[in-house]
Length: 153
Length: 214
Image 1 (cartoon, rainbow over the protein chains, first blue to last red):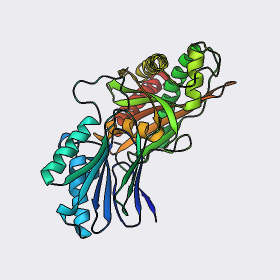
Image 2 (image 1 turned 90 degrees about the vertical axis):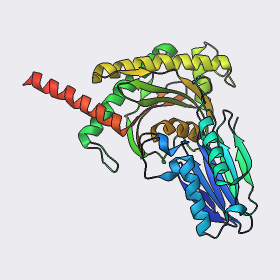
Image 3 (image 1 turned 45 degrees about the vertical axis):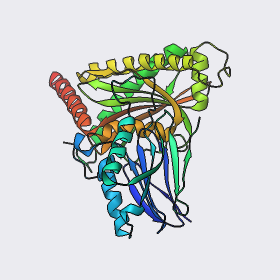
Image 4 (image 1 turned 90 degrees about the horizontal axis):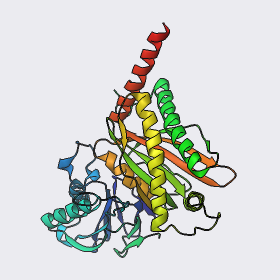
């Protein structure tokens, strides 16, 4: 059983019995896709909400919306059907809460963007641990589909 | 023009090390005055990193650290980060609040205010010196403070840079205050567009100097 680490702006897929891991996320958002029938999963570590609002990048995983497109593509290649996919989201914390921002706090816009995209694609969001002001480490099991989250206070 | 995959020239590295020394030097002098203690500073380390690669700082991504972070605005964009491991953050707080070493066990909201204040003083001193040296306007924003896993903090700081580029330059010095065991890291982080600006400004300044010598 391997622990596969996913860095910022990266996306990786894995199958039973391996784990997908993202250590120390802050305002970034981690999206997991799980196919319980095939026991395969994908984890994307995204930084920004919307690919249209920033300078063009070669890396679609940087942005939550294009990351979802890429995750769907990879899962499809491995044989998954969209209706079988279960999504979970983790992160989007406001790490420096003493600073007041006008409008959405950092991290909040990431969360909002992912929700909107998942809904638009018709992907079921079955779990979430988002917001707050704590960093999180994420461990995603392709055996059970369970996403375990660690916070240090 | 510095682009992706570009390797900084020796002169450019030297110039950036110089401004880190100036920035960190002024900041640690201000800190030294605040703490009424001597502070020793290491030679600046330069790391041109892809946004994905957060350096392994202080022994592990999930290690708890206290960070004071502020954005640099004005003619350039960037970030200034002061990072302390948990033990050092508590020590600094004791020293700044005039308490006996070992008193503070966890940081209260009041302690955070003290650290924010320290951040303001250091940032002002650092950025003023850099502004003068570079003939550019570098101004501090309001500092944020967080105690959390190092990687969570650095990831969040670097997200701001992700909007404009896939790379960031981390300029880092380590400082210690003997005989206490306060150890901290001082980071200046800039994206490639800003690095270009800074390198141009330094070259201009050196060019000007050379003309005077001739």
